[in-house]
Image 1: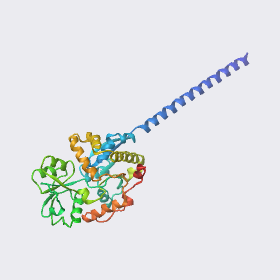
Image 2 (image 1 turned 60 degrees about the vertical axis):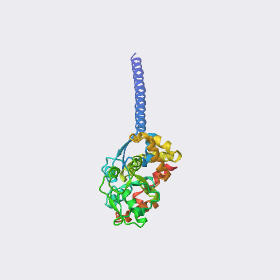
Image 3 (image 1 turned 180 degrees about the vertical axis):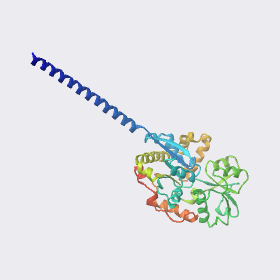
Image 4 (image 1 turned 30 degrees about the horizontal axis):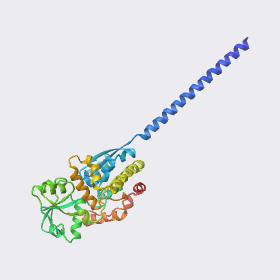
Length: 348
């Protein structure tokens, strides 16, 4: 009888242990499943990226195509676009960490590097290869030559900024001394020169779009020259980020560059009218006809690169322009301030 009781007790104990083991396995499976689900959710969750652009301009059409067509979302990026209104302000935003990526003239990265910044800004994608501004006169000038500026007053750009430096570079290429042959007014804020010109200031003004086209539509000015055409191929604007951000987030930089390349591909394979229609929501204050006119103007002068690779020759030319303008005390190394690995991968 005693043996039987012991046997029954053993059987019950073994059954309980078996039940506990099964329960434990089931709980383990559920825990693993929950963990895997959370990992999948984390992996698929878009990464928030703040981009600070130097200006909001149709000049940067491929970037807005990428935004409007959802290319950043396809790359897992939740993009916030902020306008800095000047390369100095955009650079400050990147260095302070309020922006992850900056879009501006690459001269800003050279200035910062030469000032001794430890965590300096590196360019990883070049978007535009022509200057985006135009010379506007008060009357039509079919036979315009740059010599027409001698003795005249021109509303120019900020000292040390790409618009002004490219303008002065063209003057010097045409044997015009910017300091003595022409008066350049640099006291007017960026974005306000068109209004000042329409109110009677200056004989000429150097304008981005839509300023140039709007002056023409109002009958208050006429585009007589393209700085983008007359200066040749110039690395006008590029995307950059602090070296530490690039090192810590290579997959984000690659996804960002991939999205931009898709925007470039779209622009290269569609008409100005099609491009204008896509980016129109970015410029609600501008009618579609005007947007199309501006896109066509940029399209015809070969403004956008076919890929985003920032080549050494372009970087050297940029520093030539800086030296010619008296803005560069020493040249910066291309290998330190430019990386092409993300753009090279994206173009494939």
